[in-house]
Amino acid sequence: MTKRPIFPFTAVVGQDLMRLALVLNAIDMRIGGVLIRGERGTGKSTAARALAALLPELEVIADSPYNDDPKRPDTWSDYARERYGNGAKPPIAKRRAAFVDLPVSATEDRVVGTLDIEKAIQEGKKHFEPGVLAAANRGILYVDEVNLLDDHIVDLLLDSAAMGVNIVEREGISFSHPARFILIGTMNPEEGDLRPQLLDRFALSVDVSGIRRPQERIEILQRHVAYEEDAEAFRAEWQPVEDSLSLRIAQARERVDQVKYTQNDLRLIASLMAEMQVDGHRADLVVLKTARAHAAYEGRTAINDHDIALAVRLAIPHRLKRGPFADATAALDKLETTIGEKREEMSQDGQGEDQTTDTTNSQQNADSKKKVTK
Image 1: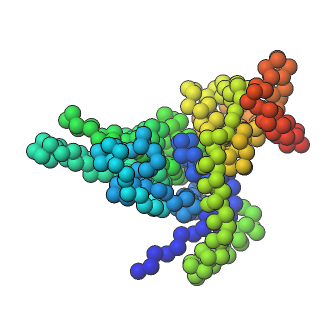
Image 2 (image 1 turned 180 degrees about the vertical axis):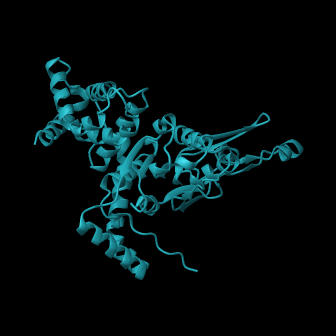
Image 3 (image 1 turned 30 degrees about the horizontal axis):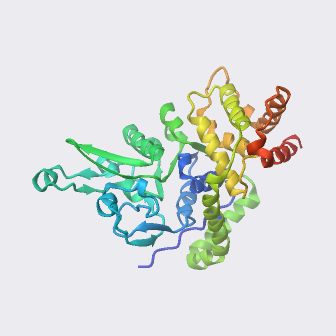
C-alpha cells in the first residue's frame, strides 16, 4: 500500500509565528524545541509532521542505528566509536530525517533504550537496545498532548534535547549515543497545563487559535478538499515552494555558526530578561540562539534588533510571571520600541558598538530602528 503524501508545510494557511518557530528549530536544533499550545483543529500536528519533509537529507554512518554523523567523530555513539574510532573509514549513506511520534503511554525504557545486563555479564559484550531518542537523533521528536505525558518522561526528553546526548547506565555499565533532535510538543491548555519548571525547559512557545477571517477559512477548506481528493497532485503542486524553503533551511544551517553578535547585543538581551523578571539564564541563551538562527534564515551574518525582538516574542510568553509584573504580555507589543530606546540609552551611556566585530551590524540595527519607529 502506497504511503499517503504528507500535507505540505508551505500549504498551511496562516499560523505564521508557529511555522517560523518550527523553521528556526530546524535551522539550529540547539535552540531546544518548541511548545505549541492551542485549541483543537488549528494545524498544530499538521505543521509538525510537515516539517520533517523539509529537512535536508542526512549523511549517516550506514550500519549505525543512531544516525551518527560521519563528519563529527566527537559526537559518535559508543557503537560507532568501537567500530571506527581506530581510524577505520565508516560506510556512509544518506537518509531522510526521521519523524518520531512519541505515544503518551511511553515508558522510560521505551524512550531511552535498554542495556542487556545479562548478556554483558555472560558474554562480556555491551548490548544496547535503542529507544525513541536513538531513532529521533538528527530528526524530529513529536509529542502530542505533551501535558498528559508523565512528568518524569518529559524531563528525560528535555534533558536529552538540551544536552544532545543520551547516556544509559545500569549496574556499572553505560552506553551513550547522540540525541540531538527538534523537540515539538503540542497541547490543548483546556486539558491542563505543564508545571512551570517543565514549561521553562521548552525553548520557544507559540499560542495558536482558530483563524477568524472568512477568506482564510475558505482557503483552508479549499486546500484540504484538494488534498483529500488527490494528495499526490496537491503535493506536486506545492513541491517547488517546498523545495525552495528546504534549500533556504539548508543554507541557513551552513550559515548559523557564522552569525556574529556584539557585547551590546548581550547587554540588551540580559537587560530585557531582567526587566521581565524571567528566572534563571536559560531564556537569555534561547533568545541569543533564536536571534542567530533568524539572522541566518534572512541570509545575514550578524544579528539585529528585529532578530532579538522576534526571539523574545518566541522565548518569553511561557516564562512570564503571573502577578506583580502582570501585564508583561502587553509589554511584548511594545517590544521593538523598547529595544530601540535601550539602544539609544546605551549610546548615550557611552556603551557603543564593538567596532572590531560589528561594523556591519550597526547599519542593520539602524535599519531595524526605522522599522520600529514607523
